[in-house]
Image (cartoon, rainbow, N blue to C red; front, side):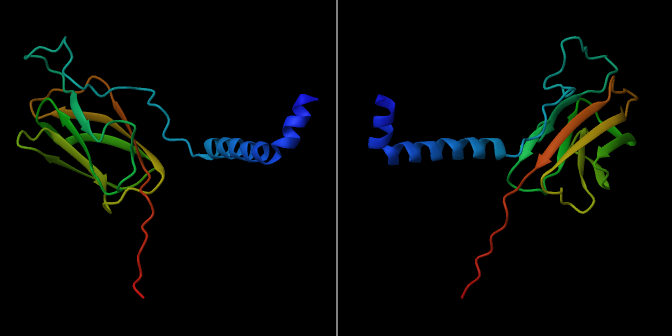
Length: 165
C-alpha cells in the first residue's frame, strides 16, 4: 500500500525516472560496436629480449596508428610500420580485407618504414580493415618469423557545411 501511495504522490518523478532509465538502456545497446579486439598481437613494441645484434629476424618496432586503432578524426592517415632493419619492398606480400587497392612505399632515413594507404588516399568510413603482412624481407635478407595481422577502423564525424545566407 505504501508503494502505491508513493507512486500516486510522485507520479511525475517516477515516470520521468523510468523514461530516463529506458532511454539510457536504448542508447547503450544501440551504439555500434567498435572493432573487435585483436586475436593476435604480433606487433612488437620493443625489441624482444631474445634478439641479439647478429639475429637475422626482421620485426616490427612500432606501428602508427596502433593495431585496432579507431580513428575518429580523419580517414586519410596512412599506416606506418617501422621495422628494426631496412626493408626490401620487392619482397612484400600482403592482403587486405575488404579488398581494396593499396599503395605501399618505403620511407625513413634508414629505409625501414613501410607506409600503406589506399590508392585513392581515403579509407572508407565505418569499415574495419584487416591488413596482413604475409611476407617481407630486409635488405640484408632477414625475414619475418610470422605474418603480421593489423586492424584499423575509421569513423570520422560527418562534415557539416555552414552555408552563408
